[in-house]
Amino acid sequence: MVTLGSTLGTSPGRDANQLTPAEHQLQLRRAVIASTVGTAIEWYDFFLYSTVTGLVFAKLFFPHSDPWVGTLEAFAIYAVGFIARPIGAAIFGHYGDRIGRKSTLIATLLLMGLATAAVALVPTYSSIGIWGAVILTVLRFIQGVGVGGEWGGSVLMSMEWARNDRSRGLIASWPQFGVPCGLFLANLAVLAFSQMSGDQFLAWGWRVPFALSIMLVGVGLYIRLGILETPVFTKLLAERKVDRTPMLTVIRDHPKEILLSAFARMSEQAPFYIFTAFVFSYGVGTLHMSRDMLLTAVLSASVVSFVSIPVFGHLSDQIGRKNMYMIGALVTGVFGFIYFAMLNTGSVPVIFLAIILSLVPHDMQYGPQAALIAESFTGRLRYSGASLGYQLASVIAGGPAPLIATWLFGTYHSSTAIAIYIALCAVITLVATALMTDYTGKDINAAAVHQR
Image (spheres, rainbow, N blue to C red):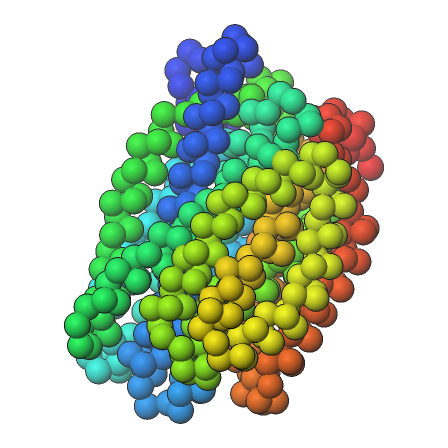
């Protein structure tokens, strides 16, 4: 296994732990770029599905359902991708801790890209009936498996090249930067093709952004193939400390850290998908806002995140990971009420501003989140533990969130119920984060740090 990991994870004859300081700095920059670009492509694929779900899928794949029921059905398929993410975390987390971060990341990128491109070819209800929705569900599941293995590896690929323990928050936040990049690209693609005349966008225009995923995957592979394996994993190979069953070991030895990582994401992930996915069905169907206005607003919000995510990641290096994260959770809990109050004014400028501001409370948590979770696990189990903790939140937070929001509004006919749901998520996050250990500025590779 050591030979296999060495072959797949590093370039022949090169050891990441024998590089000069200048070479190490160069590899750090390359690793950060590779992680960020690759993650942006993966999230483009994932968010593209999210955006199109609220705009198109209910009409094309559930045309005979009541509009509210059709939206629920479309978001149910959307949620399948989130259910699959912990499965992807388990599969690729295992191999990420066995054969290396680099080779595993290449596999996740290929899986995600091919599944996304295949969505462009799925026949609608008018062609093959309910089987179109079935195929869509399978492809969404494969998407979820791919993205489930992506996050842990991209974060570790950046963070494990960092030599300065006091800059991990900033360095680990760059793969998180891939989220607003992917969101920006997905909404930009849909916005561009939604300008088509008549019903062309609904007929076939929505398929083109999915097909373009193949080109993006080619770019991502080119970049990722040119980087070295991380010094942390290279050292584990050299010292023969690679765990034989990392996923089973981390579940047995670190169940607390896994569960706390998942619950800590409640107020970050659930509101995010309300702000970036549910807002399309709510904005078009209830507020009767322009589809293009909503797309442009979410696009603008993602641009704000280009700055805010690394800023809050850096700030967590200064004031502590937990402190920054809990401030963000508190702000999110309050902002939910402000957000829907602004949306319900019906004023286009106010709605536009609400959507732009919506990702700032999210970014206050998402910036420091990668380091907060990854630091909780020792190097030989880090890919498995961090991936599983992070992706389990998809089952309890991200996946159900648009579905729950749609059900709450349809049941109570009030957005206040959704704001209360966001506030409850924030309470859960505050409790979970308070129980986590803060490793800001500490040597996370020292055995004593993670000694039980």
